[in-house]
Length: 289
Image (cartoon, rainbow, N blue to C red):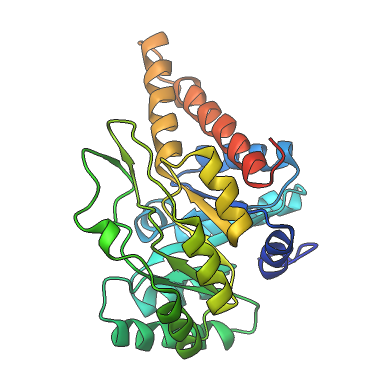
């Protein structure tokens, strides 16, 4: 990756010190990427581009790196994160390609195995010769960024314990921690909002000494977002809301231009929807709204 005025570590520490959060936005194609780029430029704030394993397979690992490098050449402060990576080999692939950060998601594993594999991922990141952040996950927040009829079973019963989080951080050496604090991936079809346990965020941040990453931000209230940032969530993930906006915009484009075959003409409204929503979140998380 190209060097910039600050590293992702520095950007997150700055956000943490100001009690604000950076926005993390998942993409799977260059149209969504360009929308986030424009949103970050308009808001004059750094932002993080996230690509999960599935999104990386569709878009391309090195293609994602190239998109972020091009944005930096244009003066837009973007960083690249390998979101929800489930094997150490895939962590290594993202680091070798030039990602700024990777999350090893061992939340589905027994605690001891999660520690073991996360520690291996951390060691690789620290030995790579660049300042790559390694994030670990502890607790259950579900797995699908999609529209759901009901929350995943027992999601409220597996919230992250602050002291176990502290042990996890010490044993693994992670740079960032993603806990379960009432958040979940996806949004509810009913439109009901999840309730974030911001006190737990504060306790985890204090116990671990690390920036907290709030995954599954879609479906949360604006008030919870601001409170989460003040409590120590320095990075907030948004994916499902952007996917819904993208699809709705494309559907509107196709309905308006039913005979159009030039993709950029009917995809355009979808990208605009992503841009508008991302800019709103960036400003909200930074208390600029």
